[in-house]
Length: 356
Image (cartoon, rainbow, N blue to C red):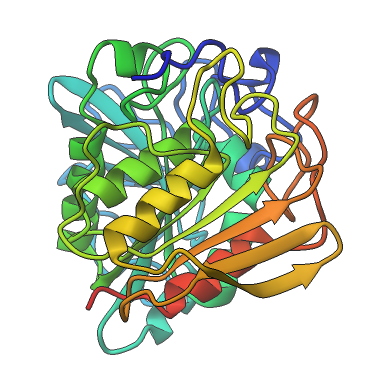
């Protein structure tokens, strides 16, 4: 197995782990220094939010700050507190495997106009040392949620330098065997128990360590997640054996210094080609590829002969760094291309790949 994520950062450490960046949410939804939402949405001593429009004493939301019929959730997600009035944003906690975990839930205004089968649900996992709000800012995922009508979840990892257990990567989460796969399933269960979620359209993406976790979810939970769109991440588990051909679209820069495109480097990871060829082989695709997109420094290729619903695609950014294509630049992490939006491209891919 490879070396375990030696210094694999999605952004400089001085911007990570609870710090706010200029891409974070504005002041009425920021996290304060202890990780809670700010004073207009903090939890009071008994665990409920105070009286300015959040959860009342019986655990249900009142009419000021919770989801109503104007575009927010039509039920209360256990452990979630509204942030502001009628924003569709909720800060949530749950206990899983003995750890209190946190996540940011965004319910778009278009939720009221969801299809009969329910709204899609998308998880966007941050990189090592980063956090939920930074990741949403880098990927511009809340804007995409509002435009397309899917429910967006940005969860927090564990540890002082926040990380996910994606097998070979990263940090204390991997070292201590934190059950992040179980955490993802627990979030799906809670959210789906209160909101109208289309169980055939649950998707995963993420940057760096979050991309590694998305690969792991595809390997281990292919009957729950419909498709994955990792950015700058690789398969980090041995014996990846999805229960069905699992569709994946990957985005990776050739000048990524932390997860090198050609493998090796100080982290000792396999190459992007190895990861994607592995998915193609597991899905039963041919070894040849067809270009599906070419613009400027970006070329996307799809493996030929994949079974229905089991497509494998790689978008390579020539000269791209350890960044989110088409998103907000990440300081010191290399070039961020504007020749493709990974968020837009993966949503197009996701929309074509519900669970069979």
